[in-house]
Image (cartoon, rainbow, N blue to C red; front, side):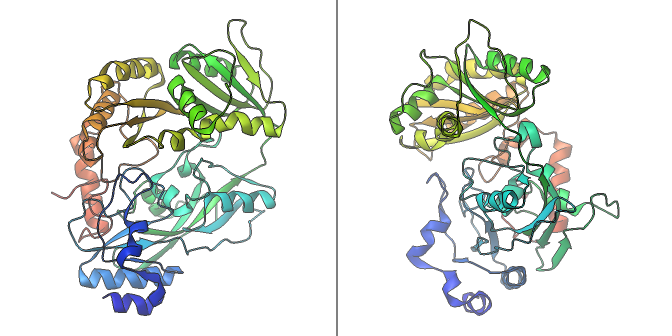
Length: 441
């Protein structure tokens, strides 16, 4: 089978042996597994041919983009059946920007940084931006419905997708890229694939919505008394008529970690429980009892953003970091974070934790250092607390192979049965990303 795959993609793009490690372990180093090979097709036709060969052999296919995921969804973690990792980073199609229809077609392997630069060169903006922009790819962000820092303004990846090209479990290419904004001719296959995490088909290209350039921005960093207080400030600003283009927040532990690791000066004169980073197209007046600073120029803006964008990498300098991603109804942000402070110290091995994320949407990232990677007690504590406060156990990182058993906390049995039926219909042999999102009976 590997010889046949080598004939399709070229022998240099069938990776085996010790070189496999870079494809079988995730970015955090927590989730790893074994695969027969990593296969790197160069176009959609090669993807289809690879999948057909694997289907004939009964070998599972694990799609992988930039491998920036944090829930084991793009590596063979706990995969019992023989599998290959289908690496899509060589799918580098990037069409000219369609200036008449404000969109562009990009291959699954195009990074978000490259896509954004391509759009900006044509006078447009792509609506998704995130700290992993230099590695995260179009295919991976569509497959997980990634959010990032502009969700409050432009929505998640789902809001950017106008159509997809996908290869099904049988190796058939389905061109659903489309050409018009409104198209009611049949099922919206593309919509079903956004957030499907490679379980229904392999995304090879996307037609993506583009936006008018960003207005001139003012960036503020504000000290807040709590997560709820940060949300209150956001609400007041949003209701004032000033457009909010980003609303990010980090707790004091995150700020201290970022400063320690990067040798950065204090962001504000005093320490605050929570720091709120706002980007606006106007100016706001701060209450006298709050401390805030406003970026004076582009370099100062980057300085303030660094406290937020270095959060995940900085905590990762500590050993055994468990990275968790939840969403809460915004009225429960304080309830959830207070409960974390009560429950996490009770878990054996916990040495440090930080909380940061997207306060406008109630999407918090909880990174906990200390417990062994194989110990999931702290993960269960965080996700069950999120469910307790009517939240979600997966916001923008996906479900992956870590959380399928937790979906029952936030989804009804009828929902679980429905997605199993969809999976069985689209992938009858359950060879696409087995163990991700939905478990076979």
